[in-house]
Image (cartoon, rainbow, N blue to C red):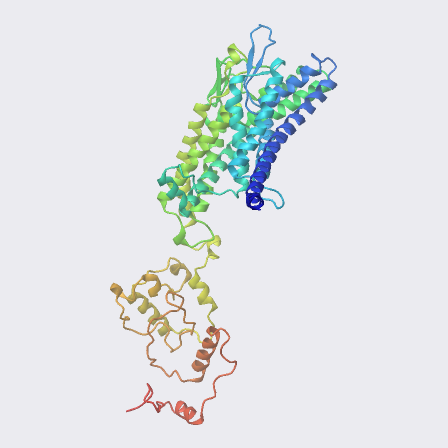
Length: 590
């Protein structure tokens, strides 16, 4: 009996361990399937081109090994081409960036699906899902690398760890982060305590998120501007590009292959154009560099359609200098997206950032833009052979600092100017809809008795005595601001924080002041003391106004009809005489 009880008690624990193991195995299989889908889709394209080629160089084994090598190249792996005219193996380090999107998206989706909670199936931990998906993906990578070793494009073993494993791990980590809801903090326990405290603050997360978004916008504008430069240059040299395209292949299958290769290199060309606009330009071999100032040296480039966009030799012209508009546009985009958060249109002026915060966030965005440019330009170029072609493409350690300098020098003053423009005092269309809570409450008050000139003067005098700060919208809205000087906002009842009310007429005196609800302490219309009226407040219109106000703030507790006034009280009120109360109340006369 004791043995049965012991087995029963171990049941839930054993079931939990088994479910966890099944979840990790499922995540491992997901990673392997994601890698297999990417490899299979690229293999299908290569095999179709090989089958349609009239003069294939090798058998199906060579085509399959070439497909595996190209798939590894899409992860950032370097390739070696052993069959060259000189007999010296030539490296191939330029990664077609369009091919990178497929493997990265598949690894990201596999990790996201493995880490997302789902009814009816066990779910591993976030760390377990990340490790299992990455391990399953890298198993397929190892198999593909071993299979491609005897092909025409052999993978470089030194690049399988970096950057191939890093790319897969980064995509998987992004997928797990997306499954968790993209949280921005908290940081792990091993991180510095000061950084953990900073990430715990909502204000810090808001500023950091704005800097990241602005940096991403800056990088995208650089890419778009570079693509525009390449498109204009190709349009000017359309004949040269067409001749290079027709010379590379004579049959339709070869031309399709060249077209697909050119399409996969379009993001690389856009980054080359961005580097050209930033100033450092790009290398066309070891002895030539193209910048907006001109093309120095003798370029050594193969015949390829996209390379027809290279500028002519000699000093640059005014048209070449127009490429500098690209980094200026990127800096202005960073400044605009930062200023939108620094002075939002849907918030009052008091919630705007200070100039120091605006400058700091813009500098952080410029730093992020420079870092993103460094990362992309580092993989946009690379060697295409030995000798003169060993340096080909933008120089990342020059392009990244140039992007940082352009964005910081142009973006910081532009962000400050945009902030001032959005916060200027005159009413602008986008800020006319921004209303403070006190203004909304004032508009909701019933206009039963319009305020007279003496009442407005009494309000302004009371606000001045209480030391209420003047509202920023008062000069152009044309009213003296009926709210804002309450003790709940200023922190004291009067000058010096005394609890004694300031002398003078009440802000909502009954002599024509608009009756309103009496809110809680610190609310709209709150007054700590009430003053005796000096005007005939027993008149019918003022009494009806008070009754309507009390009925509105009662929350439906008061009846729809006024109280029944006795005949003798009605006579006293009509004669405007003090009312005698039997218990010696406030209306008793001596």
